[in-house]
Length: 564
Image 1 (tube, rainbow, N blue to C red):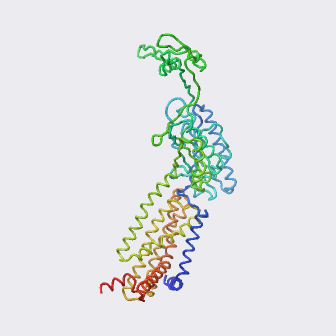
Image 2: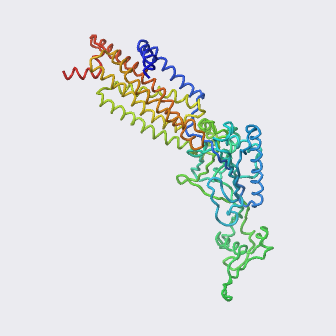
Image 3: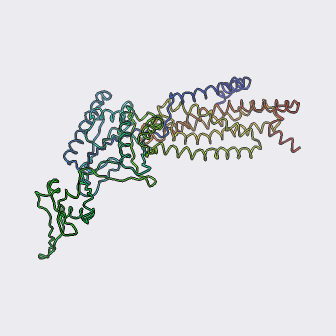
């Protein structure tokens, strides 16, 4: 440790203090290069982390009324393609490995892969049109690093192709924190349902045509087929209304209870309705006789029209207005959803609103959660910095020294960004949490050095000796703090398990940040203190025409002189 201090750090600090502006320019250039790399996309930024999963889920939703055998045959076909895709990846990446990439597959009929809860109700609502697969693959630490769930999902999509007639066919290969990467709610300001559905179809077509997106779905699926009756004007003239007509139609086809009687211990219900042959054909409804209030009977086709169409499964509202939400996943989880959302905001949505003026759009999912977090940070982060500044300022009775400590914070982000690039992670919200922890460590190390510097000045040392010897005296404490922190975080950074993936960005931010923060504290902070001192001395000379000693403008010395 003494050798490292005396042979490496001591001459480096001496050189940096003798060439202050050149050394400072080097730190600025590193920060500028980092910011440019982030803006240029070399270092990727994605607000929410993408964590590769060990479970791939497939969600299939056919139109309501689809026979269970058809749904079963389709999901079985997808299962077969998944096995083929797994074998293909094994041949390519696991040639000398006897293990299977896909360990086992759970197939579920009548279950949704989103919540794995059975759809309850009657008829088709029991789930004959819904199916899902749970594909369990080798743990991330056991399979080759070049194989992931996203790769398997892409290959399954390629082999399966488009499933004609499916309302939803999605493959989830990662944990989407904050919701879907792309989620847009279309809202009808006038509750014009026709315009809303037309706008939905237009947006879905736009999303499906984007090669970066996949698994486009919405919360407005078509329901089972319904017979929708509409009365003619002469029906009302006959004294009929909609409820009376529909009651007679339902009684004729579904039946009406005419009598109950007891037979032993059993109660017998007698229902009256059309015979099976008559109620089996919708066309027979046209000639059924409707009883009017006057007692006459008229054919249904004279007082009403009807059409067979699919009804609504759900009716969704947002702020009291009719809403349809469209979601999509990224075909490559490592892509930035922000660029796609911005393109939709600036190009696609305005064109849809020109066609359908009553439609407005609200961006949900990860975009909404990111904005909430950013808005919260606008309030909390400045407050935290102010509290740090105020605490240090009151302690050292100066404004310049706490300001210099806070000035180190943006410089510390340099290795935070490059550390993420080295480990293949985008900078995300979890990384920012690590940065917050890093700020605390950075400020604490800086306080150790500044405290010793102030103590040296009070003991009567010259300014140059005080700052140089403060660095040498605190080198061991600062260096060991950084080394032990990095060593403690190394197991998390090197861990390959699924559970560790969420914590890795935070660990990278702290470990790589504290490594660079050590250099910032031991080299850049003395440079900044020296530069600030020069500005103070020259400022007094310019304003008052006085030439003062370097140490006499520093707050500890000023405080001592004031007491005398």
